[in-house]
Image 1 (cartoon, rainbow, N blue to C red):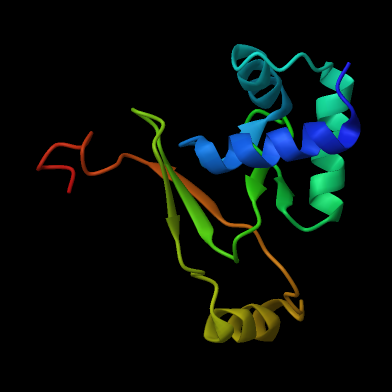
Image 2: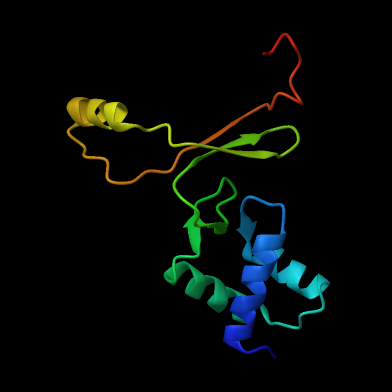
Length: 130
């Protein structure tokens, strides 16, 4: 069985190499196995949690209620195409003016947020839908 430090190193290499935006534990465990790295599911789970604690990854909620991870490379928002599954990252859309408006209307002080939108990307949409 792989040692935890080696599993973390392999996960960092894998995440830097993959062309995904976010990953489930299942996906990462599978990808490590495909690359010949013999590691248990629980080792991957522990290593991912350590990478989150280290600040390399962020845990996100997903539509499927599975835990997903993404690289912690600055705050951004997410759009996902309902047809092809493509993820698009965009700069934060919840700016200071919107935070102030939310607080004004609700009294709620927004400290952090997660925005994820879904729709149809330009490549999958028809000219009439654009």
